Length: 401
Image (tube, rainbow, N blue to C red; front, side, top):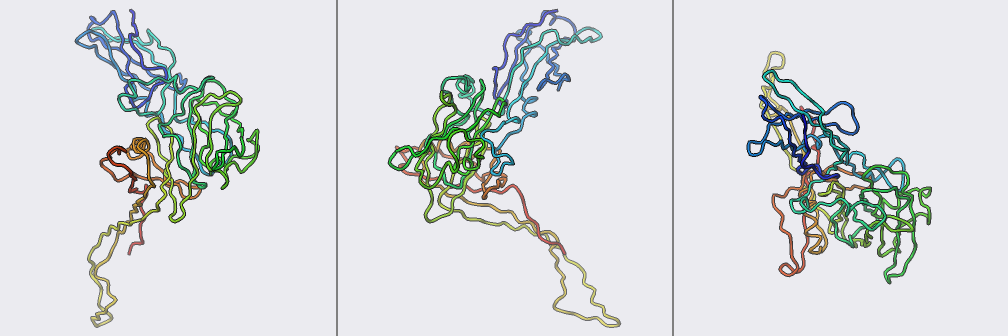
């Protein structure tokens, strides 16, 4: 009995895309033959599931996609605007996993199982969902912080606008142990104001994240700042740069531009992007709130008998509202955005996990009420903005009579 693994998923694969194995056995002609596929997650000695895979009629091979099994074991890690420990970096433990697949077979007039004949090497998956072309071209080495300049887990354009009160984080894949990350601040003339080095040595997960927006950076405890002291970002800062590594830089440099609204209140949305991390975007032109009210009524018989008489009164309630639900939607309006931002914000519109920052709390958003999205182009649309309508992730209810 021999089972050969012909093709495997990528070593660090996006779990919401196909994760397929192709296998071959020399026993496929046996009666009642099927491949056995046992999946073990995060080092467990107990298999999560056993799949029975029939042979393909065209070539007698077995082909199995395991991503639906693995995606159920992953959630996400959104940053906390009010962390209990104001550290420099944080582990995104729920965003990736390790797994091993063991292959066996069963066959015979009376079926006998032969598990664990061939064992694949340990592999990893993370909670990304890539569009088809990025999935086909996916190369994790572009994101592994391993001594040379690599990408953060975001498609956000550079020069992202942020306000002093906005929260946000940058997520990255650590390949070798990183000691610190750097923040360099500049004034409006481009002169350096200060340079900060923040401890990154306490985190060890495959995917980690660091504060990147002003309010999150200013949350970091001074005990975790190796060079410099709070506040990291104040009103004198026009823009600042963030990158991983010091003295040797191992990530791309991300630039953030400080902008405050003089007339309207600002609102920041934090949303899961295609790469499983969380991006943030600030809307600068205020908001409008609408409350939809749903009522259910019934008619009741009023007891009008008083002693030996029938008495009618205007305070009798013949119609009663026994159910009142309030659902809030909020419309946010952006400032002018670029073509690159328009393309990126499709990830916001389609995101399954969105939060509205309210001070130092995140309010869950059920969804953005949009069924289509048009990417804008400067050559055709010149200047453009984006408006979104949020349906909050909860309902309120009134008293019942």
